[in-house]
Image (cartoon, rainbow over all chains, first blue to last red; front, top):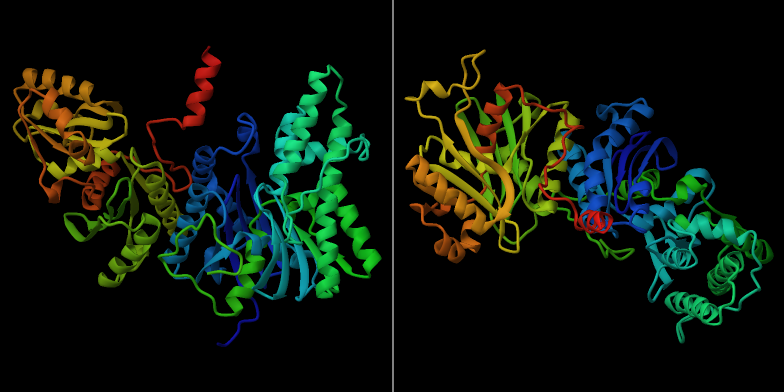
Length: 342
Length: 253
């Protein structure tokens, strides 16, 4: 395959509640990154409503794609391939992006690539760190995912650990609701925790017996709920900030501990975090400290690249494109797609 | 006028290309694979068969609802993506008007119905304006008239209520009704119990969604200026989501 100097990829992402499109050149040069968030409407329901998310995606998708092209000062005639998240995520939401991306690629006779959402999150780290190349370790934490991943090469992943039940971000949302902070829980707990004492309440760590890299956050969530109930029964006041700080510490501790174990066992020289929860200030600080202690280079994307976005999909797609990966017109959305599978 | 038409509102996936009075291609598959898997491969087959330059189409027509929420969105997103890529307008064809066109020219009552669960259907009652009835001319300006007469526009309603409507209408008009769509299959027993008006059921080749009908209806809508931008298009579900319904009920109390 003769290789062009510049590969320009139009990427689309609609796996949850953000409608997003981006133009990325050679995997790392983001020419545009448009994100249309639906958070206001889902906040009314205390969480993402799949049918509403799907309806909002179809209403916004063309405007978002057009904006991405306009911001990049490009037309579709200058685009070399179209990439889209095809899983994991909400099936109805994914289908909008998949159908749209496929139709654009088909109508313009362009190569078409389905991309794994988590692969996108990991690849978000390439965008702002031109020197970062595999191999490295990566912790992906978001509202839907908690994965400790060994990135062997571009597009080659080994999952070392994942959550046995709730995702870390999901636990943040549930606990935030229980202590009256509302939705979305991540940023609200982060804020409240800054004014609280992380040692005020000793919550359990979300480990899984017998599998050293896996996580479990549903027990922790229950422990918080039980604590709140107990306080209520006794008629004692609850300090929201202390609960937030203690809960957050419990989550961060286990994420960092498992990451550190992986650094030790696999000898990573580089370690990255990714996903919506990677914006959490306590997690960032603790991971950075762990990496410094171990002499490991630490990477993290800016908050805008931690949240669901299409630039990260464009970054991941570039390396798949270079390997010759193409999807055909029958590509379906795969809500429970596993990392490293096609 | 050349139209590329898509209908993925129900079980069948259907695509067609129609140019003025000629249906160049129509491809319908009613099988277990999802529309996400079938629709674009079908379009691709049509493009190959017709040696087609997509830039030659004037508009993309899509069955805009009602129908399966997910199916509607797959068709809409495909139409919107093609519209965006080629800078072409869309024609939103109400699904049931498209289905009524399966019986174009019929002077009887044409009653397409889509299963909407819980003994409800999305249905409409239509008829076609006969050449012998010039008084029904609707668009005086151009002298062109819409061949579709709408007795009852598409809506979600109980099968028994639809039957009652039809009974009254058949008595008033002396017309018999042809029933089509999956609603007529699923609720046949209920219909037989409640429908006293003379009626019959559409045969297999006319009983389901066909993109050819969407294309022809789209041309008639386009003649009336009913085009929209690909960006503005959205499906017409005829029903709010369950979460919105529950929330509205709570707030109503």
